[in-house]
Length: 193
Image (cartoon, rainbow, N blue to C red; front, side, top):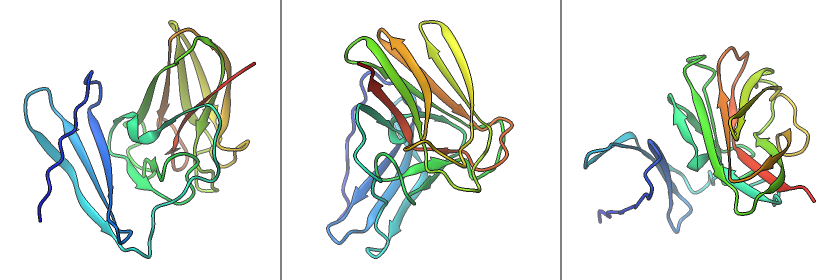
């Protein structure tokens, strides 16, 4: 039987949403939907059935603090899904090592309580990753840029330092001038005591 799902987005800030639907036999359906200002929708990628023997990835470990998964980030360009060893959620996205300079992922994060937070960029490290992934942190009008070596990590991804956050922080990952796969799993904010 065909099923219909209605999802409400308020306020509408996303351009694209990736959905994962799990069946009782363990199969997973994945669909990416582009959202338009006028009524209607369009699927960008069809549902993909995975066999029960190929379950989605599981987070490596439970992470502390506020975790924002790649599934809720805004993306520019076409990113591919990966499920190998995610740090957060059940998968991650990568740039396919293609279209350099034309893909980005942006996390706009509102913190529940103002304070000092360590900001961590989450990804699954591997030898084929970029050694110079540009990451921009925007906070109260101040922009800080980092180059992250995604071949290694210091736990689950890399620390982007600790920052005083009053309300919101934006973290943007780009594939501009990169030399390997750019992988995005999420952003972690850990309150500094």
